[in-house]
Amino acid sequence: MSTELVVALVAAAAAVWAAFFATRADFATRREIKNAHERWEASTKPVPHVTFTQFVAPGQSIQVNVENLGGTLAGCGMIVQSGDEIYASELTLPEKAPSRPFSLPFIVKAWQRAAQPKPLLLIARDVGGRCFDCLDGGKPIRDPRKWVGSRLRDLRMQGMVEFPSVTGAAKR
Image (cartoon, rainbow, N blue to C red; front, side, top):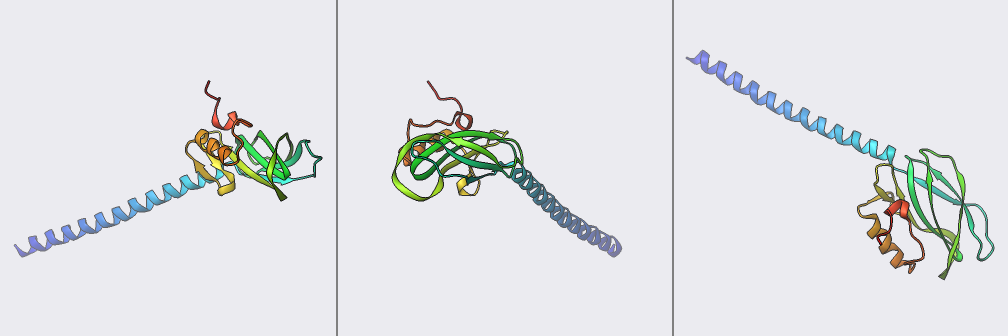
C-alpha cells in the first residue's frame, strides 16, 4: 500500500510540474506572437518624413520633400505653415520611397506668423486602411473623419481642405 501511495504522489507531482511548465510555455508563445505582431505592424506602418526645400513668394505654392521611411503610404493629408501662410495637399508614396518633391498649394493666410516652416497636420493611411497621426509618434487614429474634422476645427480651417484619400469620400 505504501508503494502505491508513493507512486501516486510522484505522478501527482509530475502532473503539477507538467502543468506549470506547459503554462509557462503557453505564456512565452503568446508573448512572442504579440511581439511578432508588433514588429509586423511597425514594418508596415507608413512613416513620412517632411523637409522644406525652398522659400516661397507670398501666395505661391511651397515645395517640400517627402520621404517614406516605412510601409506603403496609401494616403497622406498634410497641412504646413511657412511664415504667415498655410499650405495643404494629399499625397501617396510607395514603401520605403526615397525623398520626392511635392508642391503644396497655398490655402489661406495664418492668423499667427511662424518663424520656421512647420507641419500643422500630418495624417497617414496604410494599405490596410489604418490611419496614424505622424506628428504624435505614429499614434493610431480610430475614426479618421472625426479626427481630421476636429483638427481642422482647431486650426480654423473647416471647409477649406479635405483629405478624401485618408477619410474617405465626403457624405452628401
